Length: 396
Image (tube, rainbow, N blue to C red):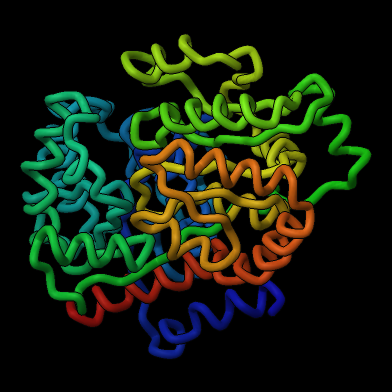
């Protein structure tokens, strides 16, 4: 379906009904050149919703100076209120004091908060987006104060919100189990993938390999170097793989070393083949797309994910995928990836070996990925998030 026709279909219900809304959005994670998972969700979904609804008014609430690229239309009014909320004490001040003042002043019909936090001190109807509950399952992986903020307030935010959107059926069930929420209150709103991710010709792949991996084939990891991303077992698996096959393949790690301490750092230092592990840091989406498309496989073996956007990015770039058999990843990957036990380096190494030696298997997974990727797009994300907004309005 052409994009413009799809957008008309997405929002026709509200236009037919003659509903004209004022919608406030927490946009504090729209940070120029530093969009992470939740930031991309906010950017891609709200850009489409704003531009498809010129008759509705949108209030974008920032906690610092904003970039004009995030003002998606003339129907967006940006508001900057402090303090910059990047610490639990400042989270509290921003959501419980600054946000209520803005909402009282502008009196919106709905407040959308895409980052799992909302305000307990406002009567504005709230749509809360929860991406995952990793902090409930692995609280030791977060700083003490941040962990306790999440553990204390999330159940309250869940009860406070009129509706909840989340990014997978796994996360929906997790929210139900953790907080005894009625299933009818929660909508599944899958993530999409950046349109920059696409396959590239073989001659261009060779140029990418010359630039990033000394001309050698490579496996790829994408994400913050956080404990739950399971780099410890990926490093161990890569050592096992290299020790058996004795090839020149590399492992490229794309992401910032935000958590480069403890077991993660020591495991890397003890690797037999650590010289074959290459770190790129953060990459621009266009460069990242080329790196993904040129990899022999994505190795995304986290032990906890609410969705796993890199899986869909690899599908779009037509690269084979190795991922985990736990949490949301089997749901997102379907039959288009090799599923491994993330707690067993041997399982991961065996999958890497299979994709190295079996070109037909790689081709089969890529073909299945072409089919599977049709389930995920930012247009669908915007459509489903808008449906959640309308449910909040109907309740009002």
